Length: 138
Image (cartoon, rainbow, N blue to C red; front, side):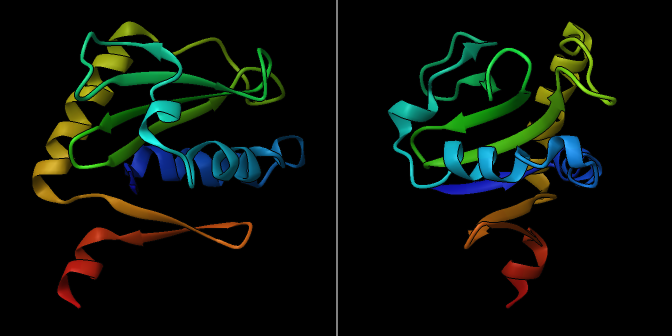
């Protein structure tokens, strides 16, 4: 499984990681998304009706934890992290609007076409983001 993310996800993740109250975010992401099979990654609230490329909202750390929005392309075993937000704490808020969900979906499809993505890897207990164009030029 290759895991990618949008710049929206990376920016929000980095903002949250600076806050002590969100210190579990990195571990929660690694625990949920890395070294998992496709069936486990399909778990969550479906935002579309596709089995081949489900758009999912996933709860991490329970009802007051984080929400992660992602697209899973089953046949290619690619996962695209689109956005993350906390439900509680100083930066917490309710779920994003339907318009925001639709905009994220359109953006991820455009970014897949243009390779405007980050590859996300877990090195030990740290997430590493590498711009996809950089990798393809090597």
